[in-house]
Image (cartoon, rainbow, N blue to C red; front, side, top):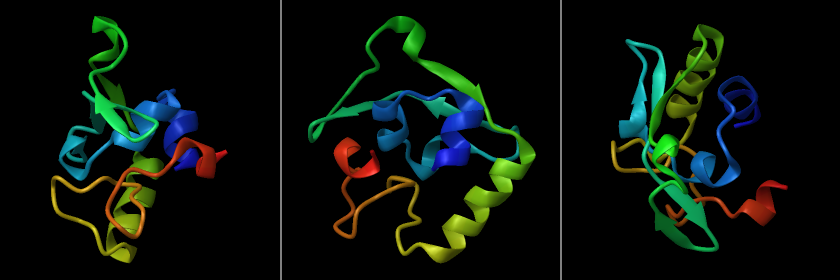
Length: 94
């Protein structure tokens, strides 16, 4: 999670809301289309928030390793989900 955040500059709420379907490993980017805040999912704050964030190859490899280790790998699943499949809480991340 930290490697993805550092290399892409995703905001915390965007990082919490990213799903497997948003990851385009073949082209090396994550599509930012949602934002999570206090249990609610919504669009990003501004129109500029909708974007494709490039992901470096070493971070893509880490994400693929994470996908092998996690139980939630359906396209609609959050990449960084809780045991219940919900987005991770920003307070827990901090």
